Image (tube, rainbow, N blue to C red; front, top):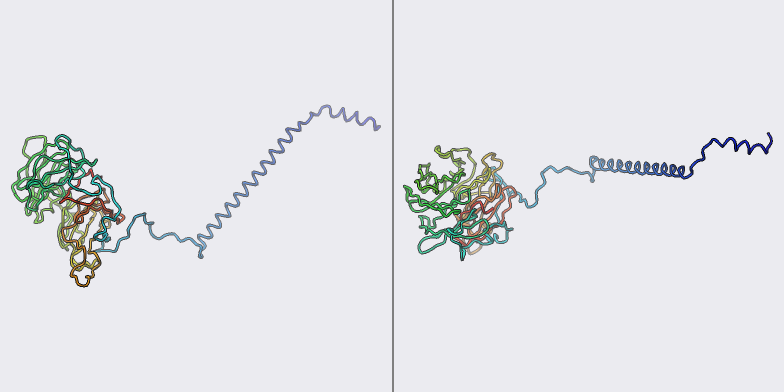
Length: 415
């Protein structure tokens, strides 16, 4: 073959071959390169992540000063106060010292910062109240006028003048029914009941003249009324003129023992928690080990807890010089492990000041008593001129209001 024939033969051989698209080829090559780069990047990140996990596991489980030790206790929620110790096997907390109440954190309620007799209350007959937060009584010409505080902080007065009872003002801590409208006032030889939502009322005569305490059942239609050595059970219906049925109930020498649905009573070695069982009276359900010398105020139930204040005998854990410690007891109706105590001791510590016979700010017996529950874990109690709130789960005590009245009964509207 001659040299000059080679180009002709190559031209004829390439006529059947398609002409390549250079742009497509370049794009395909670029895409393949980009994919290789991504695979390499992902592989590198996965490798780094695996190395980091391995290092963390070595530091955590491998011991040494950098090793992590899992906690052996449950983390403490913010605001929780650890208990001071145990009394009779029950966790207890020390209450803030007397005189420090105004410096405590405040729990806001319709009572405001200070509870006092209002200047210009409404007439309950023209402006009734659907939900009561509190009831007080104010002195008036030898008697008392009832004053009602609504859940939205509005005051109204009752038109009937109440008579004093054997202990003075005719207001019992259990005056307000759980429905937040019915209120009962002990009177000499009677009980006065008024519906704050309608202003309907009735004076119900009773066989005994010395009536001091009232306590509503959960249905808000039945009432336990008691005095020293006497107790009565009666149904209340203000919509009819029929006289209510009055039945007897097991009495106590302490008029404030008779409460529903539970009552704490008895002294050291004989303390009992009882549940009200209608015609069967109060049935014993437990025997909490409490160092009780005497009880103060009524028993109030909140959820599964029952609260009442007692004056204690001598407590090695809380020594006193001129008085006996007073204790807010929160006793469970289900498990004794849930029982809690809040101790109100002397201020300052139990060491007499030279030249004086007693420490300052002694809390006298009777100064402190439970007034109800804000919710299932916050008990409300009075300490002299203050209403305080104790969270039985965290141990924290807060102020609710300064009291510039002789007494107060709390209703569900306080929440």
